[in-house]
Length: 148
Image (tube, rainbow, N blue to C red; front, side, top):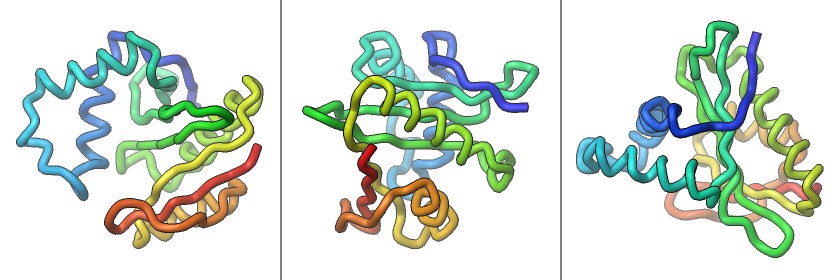
């Protein structure tokens, strides 16, 4: 069974590892020191500039996260990351639904994200959740958005 909770300072290292697993497509994470990566997550978690929820199993093992960032007038950008062995099990759908419902509940009117054009599984997930393509992002990324 999956649980979702607010991220705290104790989650910095796990968030760093999960992010690195997903970012290897874009950035050589070895070029950024572990200390700098942990500092990045400390700033996001502890200052509240991001809203981050961790996804964990019944034994409190964190295996993913959902984040909301770049809050604007009426919306924000969201992102989701799960460790590979936990994909294709419905966890991403459940975590995404949780975040969207929360953001809708605080009165946001729109969320957006960027997804790799060649990531057909993620694009299908987002389309089924109600996102529509809204143009190009940076490099190989598509921008998708959803009105809440």
